[in-house]
Amino acid sequence: KGGELMNTTAESHHTFLTNPWWSMGQAQPGECGLCINETATRARAGLLNILSGTTIFLLLAAPELDPVRFVAPFVIFDMITAATFGLTPVSPAGILGTALTMKIHPVWKPIKPKRFAWTLGATLGVCCLTFWIFGMTEWIIAVLGICFILTWLEAVMGFCVGCWMYSLLVKCEVCQLH
Image (cartoon, rainbow, N blue to C red; front, side, top):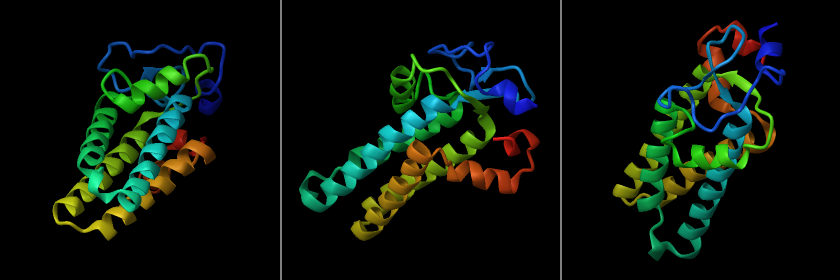
C-alpha cells in the first residue's frame, strides 16, 4: 500500500531543490515520511562509478598524477553532504545526478536507508584517504574496487548494498515494500 503511493503516481512531482532547500528529502504521500528520488540517486551512483573506475585506472596507469588526494576528499564531502542535505543543493554528484534526470519521472524511496548507505560511503572515502596518507596503494585500489562494485550495483542493477544492510538492522515495513 505505501509502496504504491511512493512510486510513480500522478501526485508525484519532481523539483530540483527540496522545500525547504536544506531538507533531506521530499515529503510524499505514504508512510515513509521524507523520500528521495531513486532515479536521481541511481544517476549519482553512475557518476560516482565513473569516478571510481577512472581513479583506479589513473592509479595504475599514471600513479604520478596521485588522483586519490583529490578524489577521496571530494567523495567524503559529497557523501556527507548527501547524507545531511540530500541530493541537492550541496552534494556535487547529487546536483548533477538530479539535473541529468529532471525529465524522467521520479521514483520515490525512503530516505533513511540512503542516509545510512551514504554514511558508509563517506566511511569508505575516509579509509581511502587514510590509506593514501600512509602510502598503502594496494589497499586504496581494494577500497576503490569495492566502491566501483557498489556504485555499479546501485546504478545498473538498482541494488543499494547500504540500504540492504539498513533493512537488516532496522525493521522498517515501508523499506520491505521496496
